[in-house]
Every structure is written in C-alpha cells, then in structure tokens.
Amino acid sequence: MNIAEAIDRTDRLKPNAYTREEKVRWLSDIDKQIFLEIIAVHKTPKEGVRLDSFKGYGPETDIDNTELLAPSPFDEIYIHGLNRQIDLHNEEYSKYNNDCLLYNSAYTNYYDWYNRENEPVGVPAFRI
Image 1: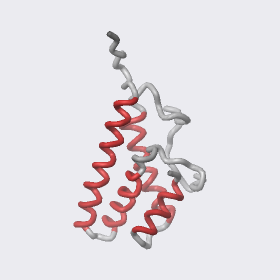
Image 2: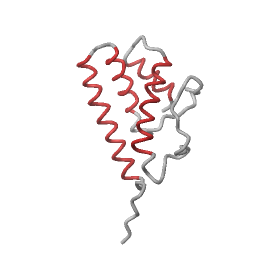
Image 3: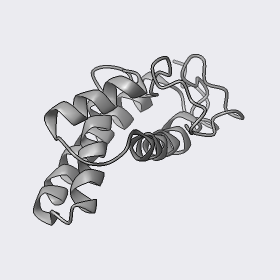
Image 4: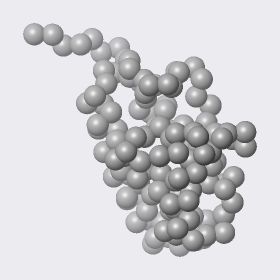
C-alpha cells in the first residue's frame, strides 16, 4: 500500500477535515516506529530500506509512489493508525480506544510475523 492509498481509503471509511499533510505526518510516525522497533533490529531489513537512510515522509515525498513499510496483509496498521489519530483529535475517546486496540493488534501481528521471518541482530543462527 502506498501513502496515497492509505489516506484515500481512510477518507472513504472515515470522512474527516484533516489535511493530507497531517495524515502523511501520522503515517511517517507509524513507519518510523516500525522501522526503529522492528526492521532495524533484524539482520535482513525490508528490501529497498537502508538502515541509515530512513528518515520518514515529508512534504517532498511522492505519496503516489512511496510504499509504506508494512506489506499486505499487515497494511491495515495504517488505516487503524490514521483512524486513531482522527478520533483522538476529534476528542472521540471511546472510538479512539477501540482504534488503539485494533492498531495494537495489527502492529503485534506484523511484529510477530517479521520476527519469525528475519533473524534479529546479535543472535546467531541456531544450527543442528
């Protein structure tokens, strides 16, 4: 899923008054967290991602051609993450709490999958 797809999908599901720039910043924060907590601590980083080069997304980012870090089927993280921010800023706290549960579940599923598929840094491969 690319940045524009995540924003468009969220806007269709949850109409809101927040700008694309705000949503790009929120998506950037999600991918910074994914990068720092998941990808950077494994020996095999996501293809095309350099450990010293991920700085997030900004106004210069081509949102139509920039793929987000979590692949399908884990890309629901982004929809739940945007919904979470929208409800937080709208002061709809019960919806926000539900969004947090959905986001945390999606994030944990991605973390668990990535951890199974990639060897963590500093842990030698176990050989029989």
